[in-house]
Length: 361
Ligand SMILES: [Zn+2]
View 1 (tube, protein in one colour):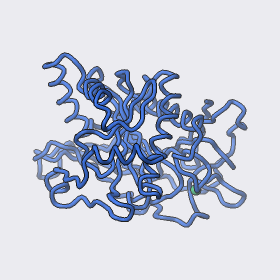
View 2 (cartoon, helix red, strand yellow):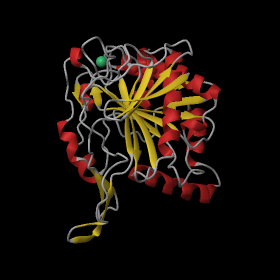
View 3 (cartoon, protein in one colour):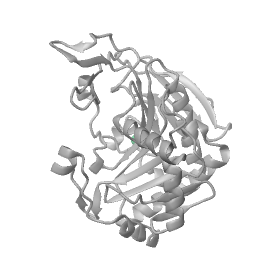
């Protein structure tokens, strides 16, 4: 993998990650006349739950479902400059033009006016876009293993870089795929958020991991992994370094966890062999997911990484892939119980889903 960092017309960073050193030099200049963005994002802490909420009102004007010939993630062509100045690329990462978090946000008072119990802070972090291929109509599951490997290296590179930025407490690479998920651009891409706080989900998981470690002297996910591998009933793919299984208390109609056999805090800690092995295994998982309803499955793929400064020895990197699709054409909506009380009601058992995923693909 080779890496080249450049700047876009408005000063945002763009980084090319090429599969091989034989790629052409990435020297193309962004010719657009782009106004500088002045993100004004902020975060406020809910005084009842203790959870942070981000506000980014400037995002309302962002690009929404453009036609394919106006895709801002495709490479630039003569007379039609996009977000990517080069005429082709392998993997490219750039700062989001409409970020939820950014480095140059203005300072604000430490509490909400008239509400001293509500903490408030500038949304200081970073949001990046990751394009997995320059081919507009491809999907992640159609990438070659060597391209997936480049994506993994890009995720690891960005995790290290964002972790070193002032204010960033957790780095979250993810992919939203499909209109049902609310994707506004169909070009195969994901995002990376550098949050200015540890996310509520990660805080909850760290509290459980700490309690389990104190009681049993072992990592909870390590014990889950060993038990799932021994039971086998929910396992859908295994390899030397990774196992993919439907978790035994799955929330979503389709949910798969992809877990490395070795406890590592984050993507940069993965070995070369673990990264290569992940590329092969994850492609097999995605093929099964698309075969499940015999149509491209809308999904969210979410990397759970250790926070930058806390709980690193308790964390165990893993990828959670899940879908809102409960049949080929029926969506699960987050209704009263899920949205109001965070209690998921699942219409299928994890064992049934695992059996079907093993039978296809
Ligand atoms: Zn495109």
